[in-house]
Length: 186
Image 1: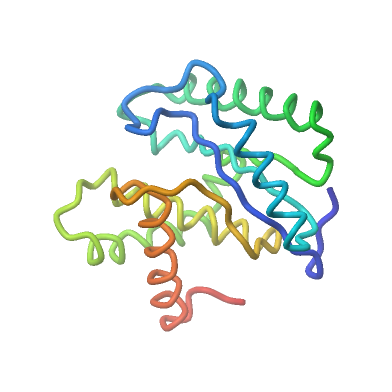
Image 2: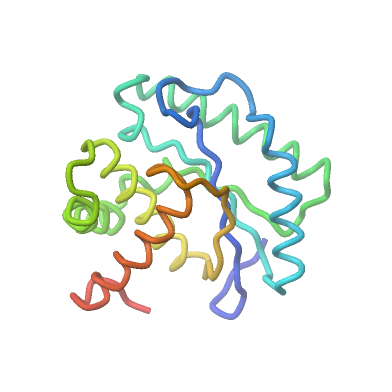
């Protein structure tokens, strides 16, 4: 996949933990294939040039349930499975990015740090690990927006605090606040 400032990309994320984040997944989640097929339809129908699949495997996000080595193994296993799915369905316009490939980047870490107080203000009384989840996921999207010109994000829907709708609302709010502070650049 080639990327430049003219091409537009669609982002999807696939995590290595169950929805409750209480344990690492042992196999590829059953819904990955239909999810990627629907994402490809969306990409194609909306004239987006590329797709970016984020393997969400930041060791810091999973430290309460697994060691860094276990997180790395789970990320590698999921990445390999997703590569096979892309090949089998000839989804050549997609690439896979492992979160661990940029989770220690200074710009990414600074962005995450700047998002934590915004998350705490937006979600008063919410556990620190949930705040870290929102800050981290927002930093992921922003980092990949810059790197791959991500213009759209495709995700699952749920009305609970961990759901994509709640995240998307937070992303909009946080982006506005960081733009006002001059932290985000176009």
